[in-house]
Image (cartoon, rainbow, N blue to C red):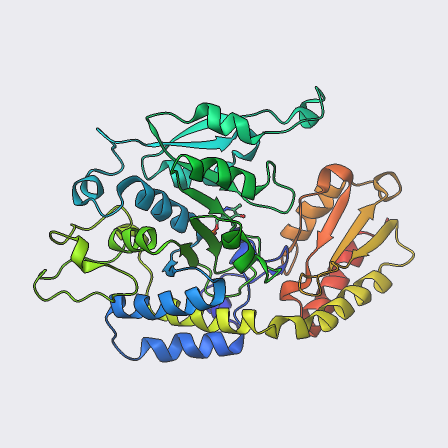
Length: 399
Ligand SMILES: *Cc1c(COP(=O)(O)O)cnc(C)c1O
């Protein structure tokens, strides 16, 4: 019996992937072991973050890194670091920014619900550009000159949401920002794999980058990475770590925090409510090692086989299946099941609802319901779950 069943709750079959709502990615056995071992002893968290700083720097090419409570938390802390630097008075004031610049310029088309994490630090977002292709009004998207036109005395930085098709290209935005001495904070939460993105986004000139620890990297769900410039990562660490110590006794790791720049200890900062535990830190570092060594690539063939079984089992039903296999050799294969809604007499939305309500509950990817498609992400699949999934899909997809 699963631990959830002991508490009276039914675990689900998750074929939506590493989504937060459903508990994130499955942690590999090695990560789970590291988590438990870390829990058995005490360790000063600033020293442990000093170690994390080295491991993350090695994995990303950054000057410094910090384990945060998710990418959203990395965005709040990264924004806070840009707003305050090592200024103790500013740290104490956040999220209020009286008397210092707090505007971040970003492309209007990159606005999304997660940017609340940036605003939470005290940032005021200033939107630029139009995505005229979406509007059907033209062929252009946000352009670098529009950022420059928006820069002014209240500008503190630039916020950029990365994906392979983001426009303008990150390097152009970085060039425009750096020409004015402005730092660029990048949200790349879900952009690994491919592994190369761990380094490429920083190499394009970003000053700070946020990654999720509990998505493609498969660390604990509530972890993330903030990496980039040492002075900014240090300012972020100062605003997250617990500050209940004597300044005279406090010896933070030099690679993470430059103690000589501080006149005293800050109070608990804006990130104090986003603390990470020693277990989470050690587990994430373990996952980063596995991820960067390519350990997850070896499962891809098996996961693809699970999808092939599903596809075969649905033959003869009013559906049309298609498996998409990314060419990078690192990202997961995905199965799309297009439903002939008329033959079935049921919409994709209704099938999705019935799958969730069944026993066990099955949560399929729901991004393409409008097109009449269910999406199956194999991240959590094994042989036993695949068998149950097939049975439930056949029940709900039989006319
Ligand atoms: C998932 C996600 C986040 C939040 O990441 P967490 O690690 O869950 O905090 C932020 N931005 C984007 C674009 C995401 O996909």
